[in-house]
Length: 369
Ligand code: SF4
Image 1 (tube, rainbow, N blue to C red):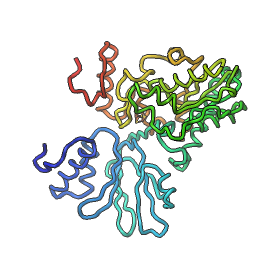
Image 2 (spheres, helix red, strand yellow; image 1 turned 180 degrees about the horizontal axis):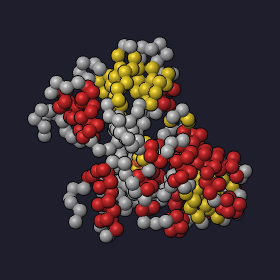
Image 3 (cartoon, rainbow, N blue to C red; image 1 turned 135 degrees about the vertical axis):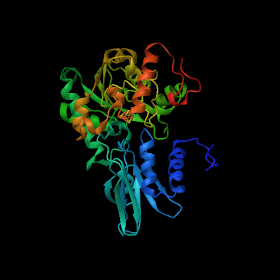
């Protein structure tokens, strides 16, 4: 417990950010110093918005700019807003102003936004998984809609696996993040995109974050396959990613039962080989099917005739950013921040030595042997 702020419970990472800022402000420092203290002392991803006791509205982003944060204003310029994605500005009829730079603090007064570059980090590291999975397709990054980038991902995979495309009759997508790449696959290959997998409107859980037992039945209930559209056909399904592999396993199983002859999986996000320590729920090597298996082995495990991952180069090019501007840690093993790299290296060594990770790495209640 901190004597300065005894009410803090430290049950979430926001408490740690608040605590650090309040300590600085209590010492008589200004908001810029408080934001700098957070940026200099915390290793990881944070996009922070807040209001001080004096009513100053502010936002800032970690020095690597791992997660998105943007700013906008209402048409009458009376209201200012920050949002992780541009879509929420659009939906509220706000004008999009700018995306925050890594290490930037933005304050708001009646005159508008004031932008202060608190820390200039030579290495940016925007999360590449935002493009493939997290972001809404109707959000924009660097002026481009996410769905357009996902369509390019689909085109790339067609170019990278022409022999598979030649063998197939029809494209299916796993709704909804698979839909936009499916459009790209369809346009590039000329194959028919059949909407033969339909999603249950009222089953809304994300399989990604469910417990193992719940996951299988949720996916089974969530996705329905129209058998007459896939019977006796060689099918391509487009997926945004394969994390544990169970979503894809269930879908392939359903396709086989519906009579599909061959099933190839086109995956827009390259093989995930390592955990993410930047706020995504994939924090151990053990839970990642790609940490120990290559594409051919994964295909065998999930029951596919082939798994065709988009190349890292293709992904990077389609985003319009460079390798040095993106976080690609979970697909390359190279983490943009030192603590994450240290953690990943230590855990990988233990994992390869046979240590069974039981829970999130940063929640271990007993030290690893
Ligand atoms: S490790 Fe992967 S999911 Fe995590 S921030 Fe980096 S790219 Fe995104």
